[in-house]
Structures are given as structure tokens and as C-alpha cells.
Image (tube, rainbow, N blue to C red; front, side, top):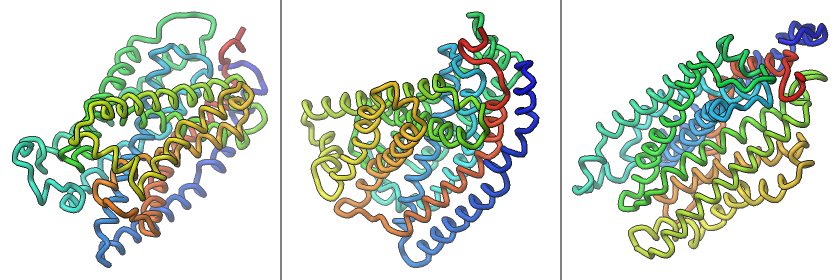
Length: 404
């Protein structure tokens, strides 16, 4: 920690400032959002719109779990690449949303009660795939996978917050490897992420159109989750920048530039995987593969939403964040990140709902309010982590070349 008296003063003054950012007010608002979402969900079940409610439930579960897990994996990736450009703050930022992982595990098992309205193979079994597509096995393997992923993530976070690891993140004058403990857990989290979220993509998205198949779909799905975590981190950084005082880390243009570069780079990676999957299906021209793409890209009413996803997740970040100046601008980076998150939510919606509603977009107040409820649960879970981010960002610790 810096010995600068001003830095020490800022750190001591931090708890009160943090409370105004991620304290009781935020918890109260988030709690009200949860209540509104729960009421909308129950009301939809009672008035005969259960299918719409469960579709919204699944879309939001996939999206918010992806954001939370993708951000934790980003923290692990920083260790794997020995990133010290922001001290310990980027690591705390990536870990801030982790409590939602356990919420997500609990909510996943809620899908059991809507299974017949979500999974078409429940009411119309496919004999050739019955060994894989059956209710007990699906909930067992996915529940265990998500539970192991959450447990590994929290074990990683516990090690990441240790004094020895924190000292490594702020020791900018050496090139020593991170402590052994973090070199064990960071790659474990990364590998589990690829395996578990590939499984989730097969079971909770691909199985909704059970005759469709794509071997690249798992990569595409977890790359989207990873990018959504990065976009959420950049958005939070831009929001905290103006609320944590004059000298917080997020006022450092170099740090904002680095966050902007990450958002830019993995947006390009997302479009690369999208095109790689699309071109193989296009030149193969097999009906068992093409129908999934054709319905979403070439048919109304889904085609405009697919184009919107492309624009929000790739085109806007690519064009707007091309220059150094825009990456350093909190207003621009925050706006691009927020639009990207909207785009990723739409992308999850386009992946899920057309398999269950072929010719109509069943979006209305019910889906919107259920989404608000999930957002409330995500925010209330993030409060402790945001407090840690705020303390790290105002601690005055050296970052990058500043220590020299």
C-alpha cells in the first residue's frame, strides 16, 4: 500500500463513500426489483402465460450467469497473462459479481418446474438421443457442473484476495510469476469455464432445437459470456469513476484505455467465432444445420433482432473504440459497454426463444419485468464485491509504471 498520506486519508474515508454507491439504497432498489420480477412471474403463471414466463426466466438465467462467470474468468485471465496495469483493482472488479453464481445455481434448478414448457424433448422424446436428453441426467450433470464451477470460482477468489497475491499485483518493478496457489486456481477456473459452459450451451440452448447440431457452438457461447463479463466490468468502472472521489484509479486514462482495449479485442473475437460457425454451416448446406441459422437470420420477425445483436456487440464497439481517445473516454466507453450488454441479452434471447416461438416475438411487460427481477438479484449479489472494488480503487496503491 502506498505510504502517501493523501492515499491513506482517501482509504480511511472510503467506507462512507462506498455506502452511497453500493450500500443500503442500492440494496433497497434491488430488493424492490426482485419483488416486481417475482410478482410478474407468478402472475404470468396464474393467467396462463407460463410458457412466456419460463422463456424469460431461461434467457435471463443464461445472460446473468454468463456475466458473473465471465467476469471471474477475466480475473483469472489477468493472472494467466501477469497483468499489473491496474494493481489489484481489475482483479476485484472481475470478482465483484461472483455471489450471483450461487444464486444462479439455485435458479437453475427452478427450471425443473418449467421443463415441459422449455424442453420440447420432454413431451416429444427423441429415442436416438434419450440417453442424453432426459430430465434426471440433464439436471444432474448441469447442476453439478454449475456447482463445481461456482465452488472453484470462490476458491480462486479466496486465494486471489490473499495478502501474498495482492502484494504481487502491486509489485510493478519485478517480473516474478504469481504465487503458486493462484497459478493452480486460475487455469482451473479457465478450463472449467470452457467445459461447463459448453455443456450449458448444448443442454439449455441447443437442445431446444434437438435435431440441430454445431460443434463450434460451445466456443461461441462461452466467448459471448466472457465478453459480457468484460463489458460489465468496463461499465462499472466508468460509473464508479465519477463517484469515488478525485483520485480514484478509474480517473487514470491508461487504466481506462486498457479496459477499452479489452472490450474492443474480445468483441472482435466474438464476431470471429460467429462468422466461423456461420460460414461452415453455409457451405455445408445441410438442412439439419441450416434451419437454425435461417430462421434467425433470414426470416421475419427474428432477422432484425439478429442484425441488432451484430450491431450492438461488434459493429459499434469496433467503429467507436477504434481510436485511443474514445477508449479513454468514460462516457463513450460506458455507453458502448452498456449497449453491448443489451446486445448480448438480445443475443441470448435470439438463441433461445425462436426455438420455442417460431413466428412471433413474445416480448412484452411480463418478460421485461422478469428481466428487471433478475437484474435486481444480480445487483444485490454484487454489493459486497463493489465495495471491495471501491476500496481497492481508492487505496492509492501503485499501478503500472506509476510506482517507478
